[in-house]
Length: 133
Image (cartoon, rainbow, N blue to C red):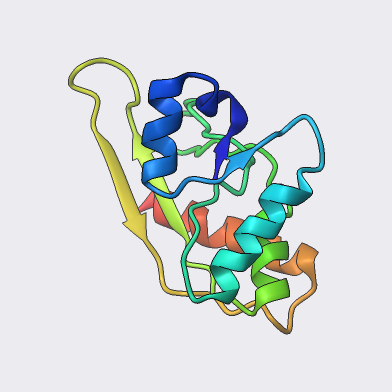
């Protein structure tokens, strides 16, 4: 899923569509994007979603991992489709030519029997653990 701004330029729109991205208008409750995402999950596909609703490129101290508040899109889609959530944590420097990022992938989380708030809290906890390793 990618913000609709990425689809305004013909070249970037072509690239994003060719890799299967779903355009999301973040200024509204985008029911079309949500419906497309649910179709992907219900057909056994996978989605990449930033639970914060955007890429977070903020920096914290060595002992602090900055995360924005989580939105409920990822857990809501997973719950409605009985999909598992595979948490991932990205850490490192985003800037400069020699910036080094590390992505750690966690074990799948089944949230079908959880309340959305609890599922979101668990997802946040798992992502923080991955980022702090």
